[in-house]
Image (cartoon, rainbow, N blue to C red; front, side, top):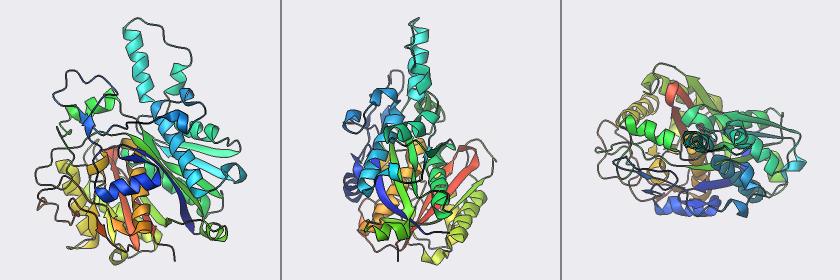
Length: 394
């Protein structure tokens, strides 16, 4: 088993593009919340989300029209990531693994609207709906031909699942390069689903706060470049972090409610796989959606694993909103940047910690810290849990 390094980061988010801008926004505790404009919000009592603005796909992509919005995010993030890593991916045995929830759902909505209006659907539009268009689009945009391509559809934990896929491929020697992460674009269908569940906050996402009311839907993408650590060091690459290991499980106990025992079990699987003791973890980047059920359940599971005084536990969703299949990939990018740059991102919009959560969520202001190990949690509908451990390379 080879040690695996993160040597490139690509980010498309509501708080910035690229690793440097994303890191600066995390440090500053910037919020991506704004009124949603990417779909018609008439009829909703509130419509705040974390929408990506100012994204010009032609800046990074040769044929943006051949991809759905989420596919454009994924391919642009992949282009940023390989440029950041300073590599030519066509010269390596590579895998591409992209996680998503909705795939090309925005194109599906366009088709449905056209049919309802009695309009002709443009030729080729349906081909952009399947989730596979995201990972295939990355490979095509980067000119990768002899490459293994997969799309992971484990809902809001999909980014971590994809990182696990890439880690396995590089660690075992099946590939010398992995481009892995997640992408999703905002669509009316997903917003409506959470809205009708009563899980959307009218104004802001405030994880672990006593008065939290739910998520803000968001969008974006993050792609990580993984390669063997020894190869990265040999070529003088910048190493953001090392992927130490991961854990996956699925309890399938409830369609939407997380299970505390299952979440704790997944964290233990990841720690065991990484060879890390709980006391060695300096920071947990939580799933931290801002819903009553998720935050209390996840915090309880963290205390079950780490004891009464767990590591600092933050939620970058307070800034980014819930970006669905991109969520844990963006959180992974934040984890790698936190290790490399020596800081803990804050949980913004915080007033008073819910006693039922009982964690230090680093309210509102980033803090400087030398981090050895960061744990990245992702908990999805259907009980799909995934946890990835990142460490400072030594």
